[in-house]
Picture 1 (cartoon, rainbow, N blue to C red):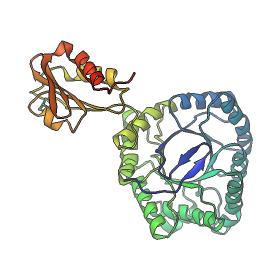
Picture 2: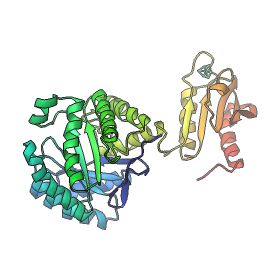
Picture 3: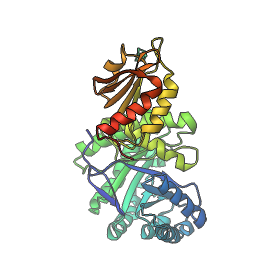
Picture 4: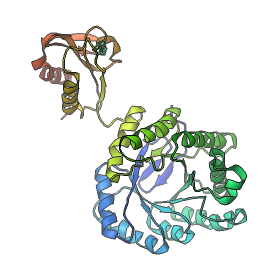
Length: 368
Ligand code: SF4
């Protein structure tokens, strides 16, 4: 069960409040390269990205957001844009004018505790006035010297840092906030988010939404596994309203991983659910090539779950309530299942895929 969170409006999208977990990514371009940034945002949106974040190192970069946003909108792309700010409150104020969400890092927005209210309260007021969302984005590894001295580089330090900034938003009666507590270590990131969720509850705060991500997760298989462990653990806890799978690759590659992760956590269906056994000495056909073929042919049926099981001995029992099953029955023979019922028995393997497609069509469960 997902934890209940308040809805935070980000342009035409909503984070939290029961909305589907939003998939986001980040450009790798400089905002000064307006054309390059616009091109990458459009590519991300075409890949299914639902919010694009742009790094904004300086005020001059923030000023470029106007042109980037205008060009993205005139290309018909409607996904909200977010600016990522470190060290530059002036850039954060400028960004509020042009993009739907601004991420600030409590570790470097201001330097002294006494200055938090005086620096951050006007920002929260401005965000409220303009109807913008703000992410209070804490990173393990960029906590302020003051927090480090008090709590160390720990999940508790991350939480205390976020709570300080929350207290300013609450004093300003501004609640369009999303929290993130990221680390390149999935374990720390999971601990920090769990603790933050707990502190919001016990502290009598509103249930604000969470943005999940493992920073610097890396590339390839390592990056994907780290992200899946950190983000996945929290999603299974019911925590998380938007995710970013951060990979050292073209950001477009992050999007299918994010959707696969959400599907594995049972939160979004973007393709058919496939169940297939690993194969063993009982397997009666080339499991890998048949599974690949089944995925190619039936992936678009996202309302269905389809199993490919190597043998009739254990296959039917272990296909976990799939809607349809392709199960090895004897050498060169396949039995097709509908739920737990064998409906076409011992058909030649060469006909089995067409027969499965026909069966799905006969049951009115096909779509083009
Ligand atoms: S379903 Fe059959 S073939 Fe597949 S792993 Fe289990 S016993 Fe082996």
